[in-house]
Image 1 (cartoon, rainbow, N blue to C red):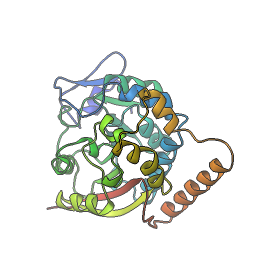
Image 2: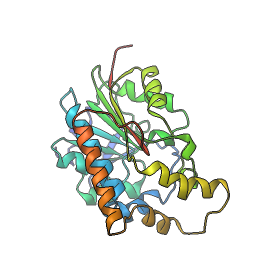
Image 3: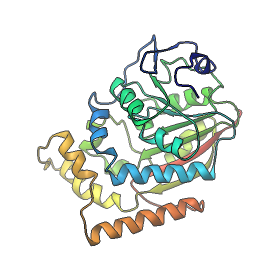
Image 4: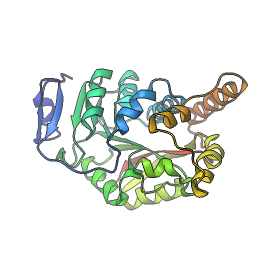
Length: 286
C-alpha cells in the first residue's frame, strides 16, 4: 500500500486528504474523551512496558485464531501512537490507524505505520460496509454511548466483517486512573458480550487476560482512591511506575503467568478473570 496514494483511501472515504508527511486528514472534527497529553504520555512508556507488550501479544494470538474474513487492512480505530497497528503489520496483516490526536498520528508515522488517518471514525466519514476488519483496543470505555458507537462500527463493516476489542475489566476496580484517562466505565465479559450482541455482532471468542492485575489494581489504585489516600505524582511518573516490573523473582513469576496466558489464548481457551477483556466478534445481518 502506497502511503501517499489518495486513490487507495478513496475506497474507504471521500473526505480525506493526504498532507506532505503522508498523514490523512478530514475536513471535519469531533471532541473525544481522552486527555490532550495522553498519547505523548503513552509514547514515553510503550516500548518498555510489560502491559503494552503483553496486550499486543494477546491481540495478535486472537487475530491469528480468528483472522479477517475479507481481504484488506485492519482498521485500528483510536489506536493512539500506532503501537498495536505496527504489531499487526509485523504479524503479516495490513493496518490503517485512525487516530484523532495529531501527536499520536505523527508518532505512528515515525513508528512505521504506513497509513495513518488523523480523525475519528465518524469525522473521517468512512463509507458504510467498506472496512474489512476493525480493532478498537481500549477505546470503547472512552465512549459515553458505547452501544451507539458499536452500532456505528457495525455499519462500517460488511457482513462477515470482524471486530477485535480490548477494554478494562470490572467496575469495582474503578480508580483515579480511569477518571484521568477519560473513561466512562469498565466492563465484564458478559456486559460487553451483551452490548455486542445488541449491536448486531456474534461473539466468536472472549476471555480475560492480565490475571494478576485485579488484586494489584484494587490494592494500589482502587483502595487509595476510595479513601483519598493517593500521593501526588505527575502523570508520567505514575504511568512509568505502573508499567515497569522490578527485577528478580517477582518478574519471573509475572513473565511465567503472561506466557501461560498466551498459550491459553493461542489454544482458543478461556481465562476466567483478569484486569482486561479480550473479544473478537463477527458482523451478522440484523
